[in-house]
Structure formats: C-alpha cells, structure tokens
Image (spheres, rainbow, N blue to C red):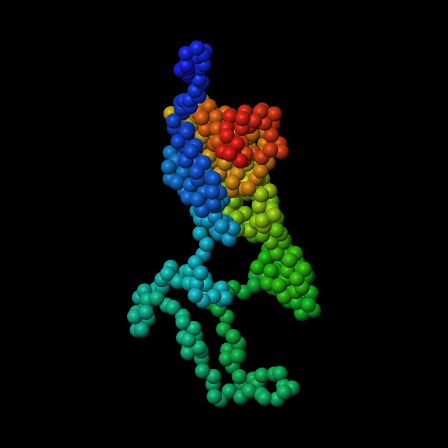
Length: 413
C-alpha cells in the first residue's frame, strides 16, 4: 500500500491517492500455481494424464514417482484402465495367438518342448541320427503291430467269447510303461462296485478317503453338477497350495477372503487379482480394505496407492497431510503444500468427487490464503470453488467472501 498527494489547483485542499501493489514473496509458488491452473482448467483427461506423466518423470523421490504413476492410470480410458494398472504393477496379459489351442496336452507340449532332450545318446542305427525323440503322432500309427491274417474271430452277434486260438497278447491293449498295478485291490474293487451301480457319490467318497483327489474329481465330473461342485470345494479346502487359494476365491466369488488372508507383502499381486476379477461395484470396498490392512501394518506408501485406486480422497489426503512438515529435503513448507495440493486436486478430478472432509477443506483454506497473499485472488477463488458451496465451513465462507469482494465480479463468474 502506498500513498501519494494528488496535486490540486490553488485555493483547494490537497487530496491523497491510495495505491495497492502486489508483492510476490513466493515466486516459485506463483509460477507453479499458475502453470497448474492452466492445465486443470480444461479438465481434459488426456491433458491431466500428460501432466501426471510429466510429474512422474520429474519427481525426485521414489514415493512421488509411484504416486504420480498411479494417478496417471486413473485417467486412462474405462476399457484400458485396469489393463494399464496391471502393467504398472508388473503384470502383463498373455499374447493373443492366431489359432486357439483347445488341447491341453498340446499346450503343455509347447511349453516343455524346448526342455525335452533324449537321455540316451548312444543309440545305434537310425536312433543315433535322431537324438531328440519327438513323436509327431503319425509314427504311433505306423508302429502299431499288424493284425495277423490267420486269426479266426467269431462274427456271431450273440457270441461274446473269443476263440481259444486267439493269442491273448494280440487282443489285450498294451499298458503304458511306468504304470504300476494297484497296491490296494480291495479299494479298486470297492470303487468299481460303486461305479457299476452308478453310485458316483459313494465312489467319490472312497477316493477322497484314500486321498485320491484327482480320481475323485474325474468321477465327480461324470455325476451331477452338485457332486462336481462339492468335490471341487472339498479339494480346494484340503489343498495347501497358495495358487489354489486364489482359485478357491474365484470359484466361490469371495475376493474379500482373498484380501483378508493373503500375505501383505504380496499386496501388488493381490491388487492385480482385484484388477482382473473384481466387479465394478465391489472394487472400491476391496481396495479400501486392502489399504486399511496395509496402513495397519505400517506400509504407508502401499496403503496410499491402494486408497488412490479406491478413489478415497479423504484417507489419501489424511496420509499426505501427516507428511506435511515445515521443511523436508530442502523444500519449504509452501513447496510441500503446493505438491500436496497438486496431487489432491488431480485425484479429485479423477474421481469426480465433490464432497470433502473437514481436514481437506482446512488444507484448501490454508492454500487459498497463501495464494491470496501473493495476489493470486482469482486462482485462490478457483480452488475454493472446487469445494462447492453446500458444506463450506464458516472460515471458508468468510475467506470466499473476502476474496470475492477484493476481485472484480467479471473475473470471478
């Protein structure tokens, strides 16, 4: 504020003029705030995504890079957002192939073919020229024994007996090498008796009692769907494999149990599972639950990232505000506040949320006061407008009125 005496004609009393000047004490804040305001004014998702990418590259700390990386994913298109998040978490979708392979044995063969090397190298004859024994299917039929021409076989419809002149070795299928005979004939007999009369449930129970779960699953599949479902459920309960716990959650559509039971050190994998399988209506609750568990364990960064995925602005800002100190890593309080407000506003724009907690409103009030003190009245008003007008605290309402009275109406509305 400065004063100057206005010159006047003779015989009249002198009057004074009052001049108001903007003194900028925080030049960095002014430039950063103006630049940020120009980006968010358009509200275009593509522009905000570019902003997040720029912030991610410019961030000095790993935590900030992770944060801006997750915020960037929030502005991806609805059809690709989860895929981008999976990639950001370190997981990639399988490549699409030209042809669909329905034969699981062929898929397994494709996976292990490179690792298959013939153990025996010193074969004579043509075997020496083929150290890698690969069966192309055609050789199987070529190597079948030719049927004997003089083998008499009865052709009568009612005659189920085979002539005694027929060699038993010619009619009996050759058992695959390495298949052992049953060590418990009584068990085999009991299962077969159950199968003969169609007692699939009894046969499955016998197999489960003998810990032959693969046999139980195959037999249950022949039975009714309820038997198949109950057998699968029993198998999953008995299994200790971590990946089958995941399968169990998928089968039972119980992702919450997955969140509550999986080790927190694998939180990225758990979040990736939610990204793949969670429905839109349960996504927020599941991410919130995972975040709260991570927060309780002391993993603040992971909890913050999960809260970002859930779109929980209040919890996210609450964590960020705890880190807001007077000075950190050479940054002043004003710079730290600017960092915090940029992340907060970007998250608010990503979620479209209009209602904010009291702690967030207090933070915006503090930031708007600093902007107003640097002469950025219009910018300060724009931030206050983000909070709406329904639930403004008395302090915010007073600040908004003060700024409005200090600014030309045409600049505000």
